[in-house]
Image (cartoon, rainbow over all chains, first blue to last red; front, side):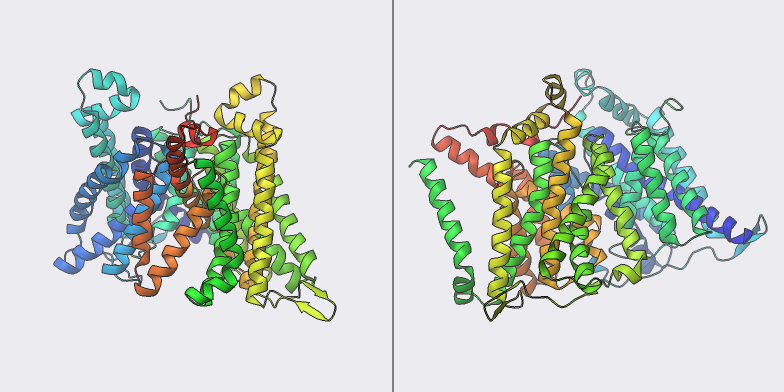
Length: 286
Length: 338
């Protein structure tokens, strides 16, 4: 009993770190472009599929870790130019446009990859004893990769020129443009980065979950919850909320069915929304 | 040409077409399209419930499928479990949807814009998962099937929805009545105060409108529309299933509404008809019809950001140098809130 609690809580924690990566992409796109991205779950799904394709093409799983975010970035940049830019940051229209995008991505994957869900064998097999349970090594590795990617992204935002531009445009678009920051290019890059983060999350998660053209549908509400509970535009808050939500869900799963766990986290979410609509962490992190 | 005359002519032609469907459509295509038309009418009422909230009150709900689902289950459980006749189960479905809308509205309408959109999704997801897990009651994803009781008996003749022509007219009558109610609502003082809240809820509260109460009223009314459409869909499909409570169903209605023209009376009908007709035509020729639907959604917001009816109103406005109030203040232009 104690072992199951530990196992599921750990699973939840690690899943939360991967979700955090995806939700971060969603939050960046939302904060900078004011786009409600219904297709974000599918960006994740595309990442899992790219990982599958690069594995079956080369026989090497690790290539997917590069292929997924790189292709994701370019897809995101193209999508921004073709679909997102023409609607001029209207949030309501963005819902329709990204809904259409979601249908197209799912259908293209169904045409090329097929409708049958597949599994990827973890590239690192075996378990290690951890707090008295045998835990899969790959999951621990995935957690480490997710943490590294999260840290890398925050360093990128703080210390690179593009990262500073992104924060500047977000903070005050008009002034940023007046100071000579190419806002149009920043938008393209931001959408690309948002897609790349989700696709990378997909590649990392691909041996843990199933590769399926509908794989993004379940992930999407979860990411939105993390973004809202963490506080709109509060990036560290998003990460914390994703980890907290998934951890709690894992914990409850060890005592009740997965559905009950999902329902409890949704109820928790409503309570947070009603009592602290500005997010759980406002005032804690800046 | 006078735009007013064009619109009246168009409305008459549309009405004549809708009445002639059971005879005209089998002549032009085949019987199957009568049931497609029935389905379009039902879903357009569902889109109208999104439109009432988003187009007229400025609240973007992503969870209307919850009330659609309650309408469905009210009917299915009423007939299958309680053994109720037609009308009481219809009433049960609508009442269940409105009660649910009241309970969730009490919490949801406190929030605005993004937060409102998210909490409506969250509520609908909670009940979706509950419905999936309570299999003995709801049948889960498989749903419950039931056989239709007769609508009424007149003399010795039994009228039942198993007759496709009667079913079409029954749905048409109910949907037309609901659209008529909505038309009356929008042009009433209550409707005007909805518009005031949509355009600026702060100003609306400063002139003495009770924004919370009015939003709640609108939310329950939208629950009514969604409930009626859910109940009709249960009669139409002779079953109820938890899958119709999933957030994607709500999302489709949002898309239909915005593509058709949010904040216009018949925008949702036009959007729904367009998407369902495309789906039906393309899916019989090509397995990957979603591609076309997705492409169409994207192109329509790029080229007709005010929706198809909004585009039409713009043309008519230019034709007669006439600014319709609807085209001037579309909800898409006024959603930035402080």
